[in-house]
Length: 203
Image (cartoon, rainbow, N blue to C red; front, side):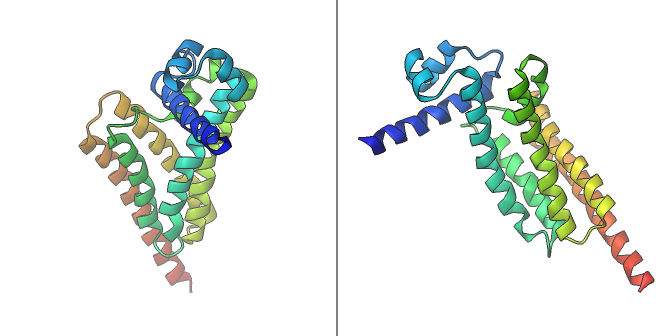
C-alpha cells in the first residue's frame, strides 16, 4: 500500500504542475488543484502542502524533468557546441509542439509572476530561471568559447529559450520559432569560427 500511495502522490504532483503551468500561480485556486489532483483540500494540505509549498514542489519537478533533458542535449558540447545548443533548443521546441502539454513554460510564467509571488517563491523562480544560463555557460566553455563569449551567448540563448515559450503562447507558428532558433545558432557558429581563426593566427 505504501508503494501505491507514493505513486498516487507522484501522479497528483504531476497533475498540480500541469494545473499551475496551464493557468499560472495567481489564477490557480485550491479548488482548481483539488479538481486537477483528485484530492480534497485537506488531503492536499496533508500530502502536498499549502499552495506556496505545492508550487515550489511543482517548480522543482518541472526544473528537474526538463533540466535532465537539457543536460542530455548539451552533453556533446565539448566536441560539438553548436550542435549541442541546437539540441538544447530542440528540447524546448518539442515540448512546445506536444499537444498533451500546456503552452509556454512554467519557469517563464513564474518569472513574469514574481510581483505577486511571496518572497521565498519569487526567489525560487529566479533561481530556476538562472539555472538555464549556468547550464549553457558551462556547456559553451566546455566547447572552448572564450569566457566572455560563453557568458554572452549563455545569457542570450537563455533569453531566447524563454521567449520561445512566451511567443508560442501568443500564437507564433512553428516556422517562426525555428527561424528564431536559427538566427541564434548561426550567430554562435560564426562566433566560434571567428574565435578559431583568431586562435590559429595567434599561434
